[in-house]
Amino acid sequence: MGRIFARFLSRSATKSALKDSIECLELGWKGVGFGIWDWNILTNEMTFSDRFKTLLGYAPGELPQHYEQWVKRLHPDDKQQTLSALQTHLKHRKQYNIEYRMLTKSGQWRWFHTTGQAAWDKKGNATRMVGSLADITERKHNERERELIMEKLLESNTELERFAYVASHDMQEPIRMVTNFSEIICKDYNSLLDEEGKECLRLIADSGKRMHSIIDDLLDYSRIGNEDNHMISCDGENVLEGALENLCGLITSHNAQISYDPFPPIYGNPVQIMRLIQNLVANGIKYQPSGNRPHIHIGFMNQPEQWCISIRDNGIGINEKFIEQIFQPFRRLHAWEQYEGTGLGLSICKKIVENHGGRIWATSAPGEGSLFYFTLCKPQPKQLEAA
Ligand code: ADP
Image (cartoon, protein in one colour):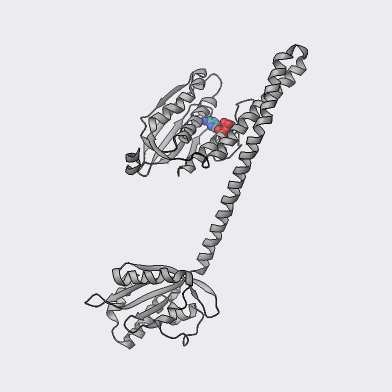
């Protein structure tokens, strides 16, 4: 648009030619609804096109043609920024492209987008400036509405997380009592119970254990992004090996075979990333047909914008139509009796990845194993230096 103004400025010399040119310029932009302004910087005379005036609610003959008419209509909160952008354009020839509010004839504030281009004499003094004006009030209102919705959503999410944290924290103690006392009864009073009593007690102990895992996972879920969110540059291989070490018991008990690609340095929260890898590898080991030896490969791909990490297993696989749902909290595709779990592992993974600005997804088919992917930002050279 600047180029159009520049061409216009170099062509229109006389006053009548100027008026014709403004009309011509406006005619050209009629379809898109822009108004035109033309400011003589030496006299402060400012020509507003008819469309410009209508945008402010004035009839073509109204609104005196003066720079001050424009300045005095600027919203007090936008005035300083608008005038200094104008000065920067005149002095340093930086692009003049700005949004501000102006008062209309009916006393309403409306949002406008303006761009303009000055002309300078041989000594480098700005002599004239021409620009366009578009009403963007509706867009601004929509943006504000979206912002408000996002703020409310964030607020309610934070509240929900706080609630989940407090509730799970407070539930830990009574659940611990249930499991501890059922263990005591089982040990010390076992001989007093008949078979039915023992079965009932086993069910109580199992449910307590299950509740305990759910509460632990809920606490972890609500902690991500709130507690210890410190991001650093760290050795990816250390993080990966840490995750595998934590899974040592599970790997040994299932005789799982684990392989992995060389890992690069990563930037993030090492504890969270360790947890992420751990959850995905543990699922790969857990969701296997009985008697199958788990084979897990942790792959690494260097993509132009990011690192992409994959975890492949040779397990039971997942039906494609459920693949999006498994990242939702408490969404399980199997009964507890079949495969133990809380249904929170993958939602914890998703939260960790999103907390790092990445994405997580999976591809799978029943009986063909699963392949989970997640992306991480590459560490910037500065972050690597700081490590
Ligand atoms: P959990 O394992 O505690 O149930 P997750 O959130 O980790 O919870 O997983 C959600 C569901 O997704 C699981 O119940 C399971 O049905 C399915 N799932 C997750 N990972 C795999 C996998 N590697 N192979 C097959 N199914 C999986």
